[in-house]
Length: 161
Image 1: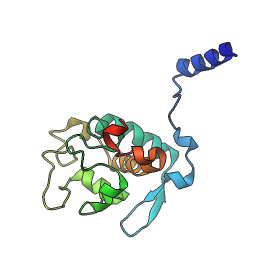
Image 2 (image 1 turned 120 degrees about the horizontal axis):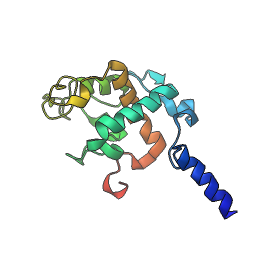
Image 3 (image 1 turned 180 degrees about the vertical axis):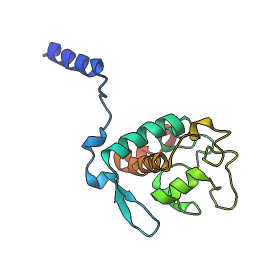
Image 4 (image 1 turned 30 degrees about the vertical axis):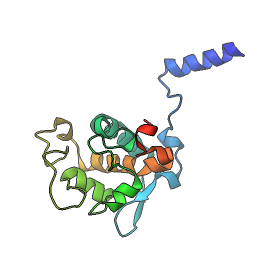
């Protein structure tokens, strides 16, 4: 029996298959459904958008937002409550894409593009230079589905990460 388990694990390792991650193809439509606009309109992300969003988030955003926390300000994360309480609210795809293009402070009163990676400040943040609107949409989708996948761990801070 132990030999079977070891051989199965070696197949996973050999082919680079994740042992504990959720595959985008395994996510049902409910999990892939996110709010598109502030008015409540929703959209179902494709498995390709989910996979792309995860890859881009991990490459571009996770250095400061690993697990949905914000390293520079742990009081403001990417959890649904923090996103909904921002001004303007950032709990939908369109507003998150707008934020990634030209970020505003949490109270919405001033631009923080010089401090936060964005399309507007791409000359200072090289990883943002080649991101398209489709890329930003996929990243925003990744952020919005994480609470359904990771539950309270997403944005939960040090106790989880």
